[in-house]
Image 1 (tube, helix red, strand yellow):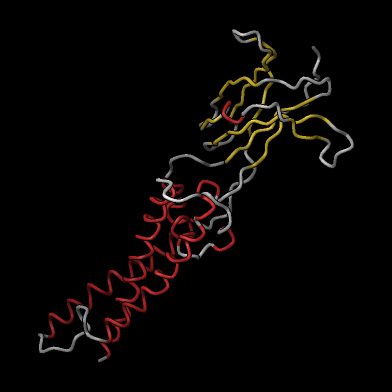
Image 2: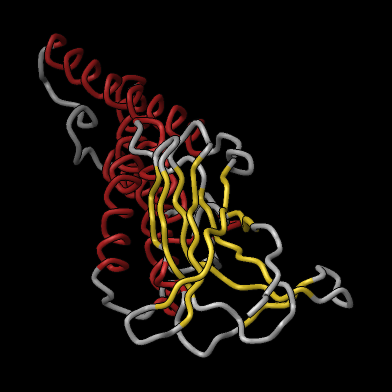
Amino acid sequence: MKRKSLNTLFWMVIFAAGTFCIIPIIFTVVVVAHIISDTSLEYVLWPLRLVFIASPWVGLFLGLRGSLPGTKLTAATERHTNTTFKILAFFAIVSVGMFILGGWVAFLPPPGSPNISITFLGYTNDAAGTRLARFTITNRNPSTIFAYSPNIEIQSPTEPREAINYWPGYNQWQQLHSKLDEGASTNFTIIPPTNQAPWRLSVLVYPDRGRSVKNSIKSAVGISYLSVGLWPMFWKFMPLGGAFRHPYNMEGDWIPNAR
């Protein structure tokens, strides 16, 4: 009877581990395929979380009924019973160990503010004669960064941040969308503001976005934790691309807008 109870416990752990791996795959497919809108993803998460919560209880129910290997008292030989016990114990221990290791990696403190340089190269004109400001961004960080969404800020001493956002009337966010390794640079242009006040460029930057084993584990387990409700502080941040870490807002130097 003791061996049956332990086997049932092992099955509960294995059922929970299985749903912990399968549910994030389902959730990712829903997000990537845009099966539903981003604002409705919250309503997908909760049923998936309920499945995860229910899975060990399903294992308990089936184990008590003797419907799972090692949980049914039969006239089987002791050798067969011991083999089943060892297999279940191995998978249960591995599942718990991977859960703890993955959780430790996923919840490591986020990297600090990245070290980058934003350099103003001067003005130029495109083929249509539109005035453009040229910039280069260099990654001086020891790890890969992801820089995107350039934004123009106008100097305004009366504001708490001493700056206000400038909206040029077109989508300027697509001008920069780059993953930069250590020491790498990228150049891009943006239409400068039309007024005479000093202005500066700001960009959003995610640090530590390389394809390392640690980052792969952190991303995979992070999605799993989010999907099954073990990362509740981020559940409102949808879609999936912004669910884990907020980017840093990096600002360049003030540029006199002399025409």
